[in-house]
Image (cartoon, rainbow, N blue to C red; front, side, top):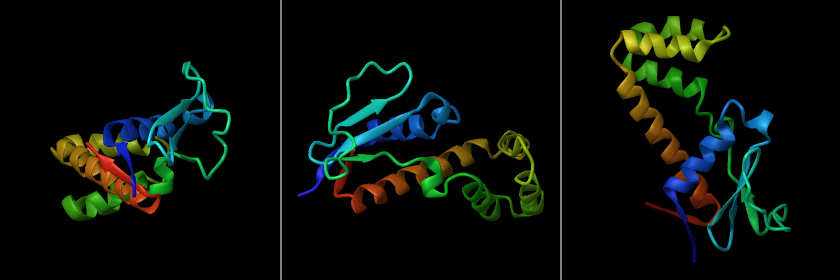
Length: 141
């Protein structure tokens, strides 16, 4: 029997641990393997974590964006599918600092911001859905 996990709560936890400030703020989140409840750790979080939170048989850490390959490679896949004429430019962007801001500027100029956000949302949800399946959770709305 799989344990239910809220999609909205898991997405929020995923964003929390994947934020650019996550490392500096020591942001972590865990899903209870038996309950599906999400526990948060980090600056500004008042929740008292279960004492056995480090027990991998009881809790699993919410994955970060880097674990799903949803950063640069997702942006490049989007461009290959939606803006193939900009592939070379985007590859160049991601070799420099501030690449994501430049990428979003390119998307804005091409009128593709909304399409990118939808593409990114679907990719995140699919990755989390697969992660849930692999770990015995059922993702629910």
